[in-house]
Figure 1 (cartoon, rainbow, N blue to C red):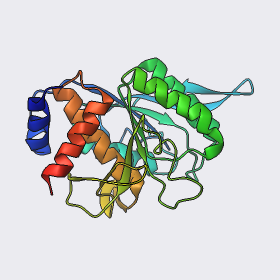
Figure 2: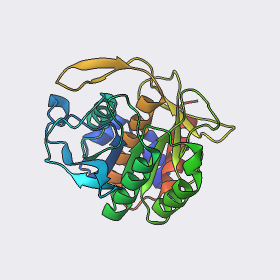
Figure 3: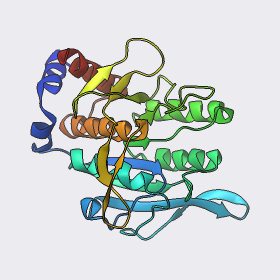
Length: 255
């Protein structure tokens, strides 16, 4: 990546970038499902899936596209943020969470393997997977990095035994919530989490066609996923470490 690309990417406003001719980017949302009938998401969700039991094993099952696949409301909010910021995002909905916003951690791993197989370029994970799954999750994130598939993951809102997995891994782009201006980003100098952006009191789509207000790292994360989607639409050959360089350059420019 040339210094001119870094400079241009750091200087371009996201609204300006969004109006340029961008290549489409496949974006997987591993979450509680997405309501593809919501007006903000109409025509933006190109596949829908759920992870369910099959012959005693969890497997990814295809669903009709264009349905309300959201069991809780979390995934629709996440997908809505991506769709609003990045007009070139082609959203793939993979439901792993239930009506309580809980899920078998193995289901997230099954979904992750599905995304790797489909070669979807961006993966939004606004969730944390238990430390018991650290080793298989680490291997999947390393595989994504080697395939140039970019994982953007949320820090835990409330620390338990870790900052949040896979957010702790260097092979992903990790996101915290911080009170900064909308569509700006902060670089975190210390610790395992690298970037922060606004995730407070965001008005987001809700299943059924309405809107709600959400706060948390889950909703800061898709903002950065959307930023990366815009960059990849303009410069499709960018690698994960180059996206991190651009994000840091934008953070530095805002100081």
